[in-house]
Length: 214
Image (cartoon, rainbow, N blue to C red):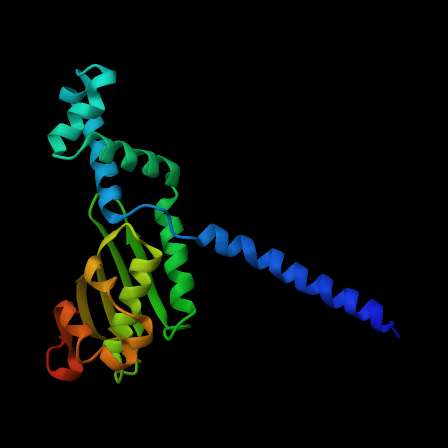
């Protein structure tokens, strides 16, 4: 039988292994340091570079000309470009990974049906759907929206919807990311039905007489 000293050493090694294995997952899933406004600027800048009129401008003057056309300061644009290039092509997958981690760590664990961050345009929409029992839809919607904006800070809009056990859509809504970012996680159970749900637009709830389109 191993001595007490050996057992302690084995325990320490196993704990260290768990810490090492857990750290990369969190590091890889960390949300990008890129706001919705910066991402929008970066995407619009990329589109502008494809414009024939912009291509005729000397390379050294393009950023200044583009910034002027966008109505922003040159530094604001260059900062957005730097952050966008640093985030790279994997920024959408990075955001989706983080949102998934946040959702699976909360009240919707095991119930997420669809998750997508659409970063194809400057206005990013994050979509989240889940299965529900119907009694806490407002809380679930607020939880999903908050996870979306925390994990995908490039989001401008969050669209959410829920299905019942039979697979019928029973709830849908959308919310501006800035509004969802004001939610306090610890207050969701108390304020979701009375306050937070009012921040959503186009709310359709079968259980309240306004079924969504399927």
